[in-house]
Length: 151
Image (cartoon, rainbow, N blue to C red; front, side):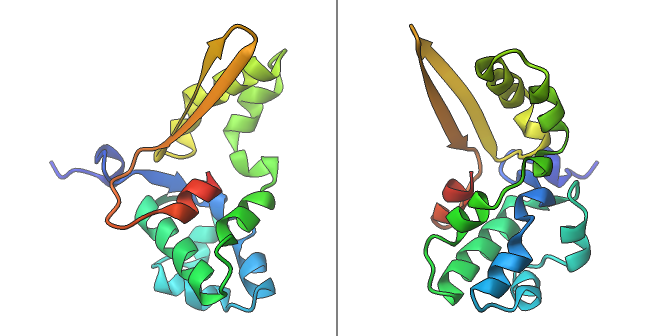
């Protein structure tokens, strides 16, 4: 039986929702969003479906190329800043009814794989202090600063 993308631990998938706001940002920074999407192998139809799963390599390629093309190394940070909580899909519902921020974080981190298979999110407690850890769990053929910034 062939191995699917989501079963391959080195080819994690991410919901297209993480790119919500990409066309507007790209256009505002002087890029042609459709051309940039095409270069990364992403169709506008995929982008329009927030639950569509895309390989981490395609998203990384899009973000890195876009940052270079518009000479804005902080492109992914700008995209992340435009994130609407609605883009989290079902994760927002898991967090919403929790009585504390810590419990909401714990709930989201346990289910993050449904939103982003390339991201591991967890926290350590030391008394009253929580240290939040965010790890990318994808094999990269090149550095992925944009993915780190987006995360």
